[in-house]
Length: 295
Image (cartoon, rainbow, N blue to C red; front, side, top):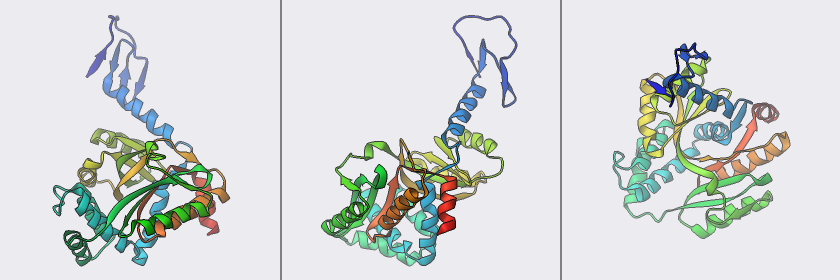
């Protein structure tokens, strides 16, 4: 398929070749141009070797799963999904489907999953609340909680923010800088360029390339569908989840500052009522390695 410019041109030599296809000034190969544009976007996002919090927190989640700490959080996520997402059928309630998929991926016993669904049906007094605020050094943070005592949980979250010099904000204070997405983390192969072009062809909307993983984003309602499609295409899926993707990131280039921010976010995650924490945090890979080696 070609895109013809407004005025006619005589036969010209190609301006350049991209991905094995000639690109002309007078007759631009649309597919080649599209792929080239996407490559420029993808390479530009993480070319300096940075890690976003969506990837960083995965290491903690793995440890929590090993300790069994994640089971109660996943159970609450299932209950909330039943209450707010539209019933107990995962085929019509995508929030429940993703919550159940996450529980299964963490090897949550089937009995635990069934009990969580029954609790929600039985009228368990559980509320879903989202807190917004600013952590150390102005990092924007969103905290999703599931609680049966909103006042208690709100005070606990407020104390955690204030302990590090941060502050809670009102609704919309930071959420304007986040957009709801489905996040699929993929193990990064040696030849990632080819892989990213294939991901684009499969319908992935947004791609961020890290050092060892590739973050791919889709609309939340397509998360399950795209996860299954990528598995069928042979991609190694590390995890898939509903997320809040930052529009603009804040980079922390200092080891001590980065450690302070990560410790704060870990404390939030350790609260029993907290389901998920989102932050517009971006840390260079060399800083991450320094923190890991000293811990």
